[in-house]
Structure formats: structure tokens, C-alpha cells
Length: 164
Image 1: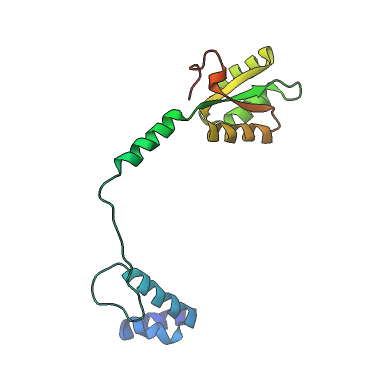
Image 2 (image 1 turned 120 degrees about the vertical axis):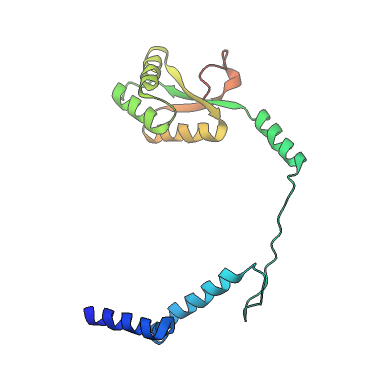
């Protein structure tokens, strides 16, 4: 192995990079050629044989109407609550671990308070977030075997409490 390395190093020094071209498999040469062609796409200068020009368009100005529409959509989007329902199957420690593992913004202390509220009142709010994230958290809790659901935050009396 040492002899091959020394011979390869000597060939590289004496013959340059082309010294290895006859030894390289065809796939490697094809990859090198395509990498060269891909590197030249979109650059100005003499064209490489067999390549095609690609037009690149840049946008300098942001469309203000689109930006305002996106802001309006965010304002219209409702907040959703992730609810945890009481069950007599899981231990407090298990419920706390699963809440902390599923909802990254919840600390162990908050999770303990949620578990106590769920035990005492039958349900507790785990998080108040947008709908997609609420669905994700709810599914995560359900996969862990906990009973959870989501509901629009507007359905609750004090809808500003607990928003993440």
C-alpha cells in the first residue's frame, strides 16, 4: 500500500493532475465533467462546449401588496388551544415528561402545574398557538398515549392567558 501511495505521489508531482486521468474510472471522469459544466452555469465568459445558458432573474423590489396580504392573513389566523384531558391510566411523572418532550416551550414546572390542573379540573391548556402547531402538539401527545384535543382560543373566556 505504501508503494502505491509513493508511486501516486511521484506521478502527481511529475505529471500533474493529468497523471491520474487514465487510472480513473469512467464514472469519475463523467462526474468531473458534469461538475465543471454545473460550475459554469450562469457565469459570463466563453461558453463551454455542450452547455446551455441559463437566465437568472433577480427581483429588486418587494411587492408591497403581497407583503400586506401576508400580514393580514397572519392577523386573521386564529389562535388554538392544545387541551390535555384527564385519564386515570398515566402517572404524573409520565404526563410531565411527555408534555415537556412534545412542547418545547413548556418547562417541567409548567408541565407539573398542567398535570395538577388536568387531574383537578378534568382538562388543562398545554399551549395556545396557531392551528398547524396546535395540531402537531396534539398529535405528539396522542402518540404518547395521552388524551388531548385542540379548540379555537376564541371559545374560552380568558383567551389571552397562556399564549406562547
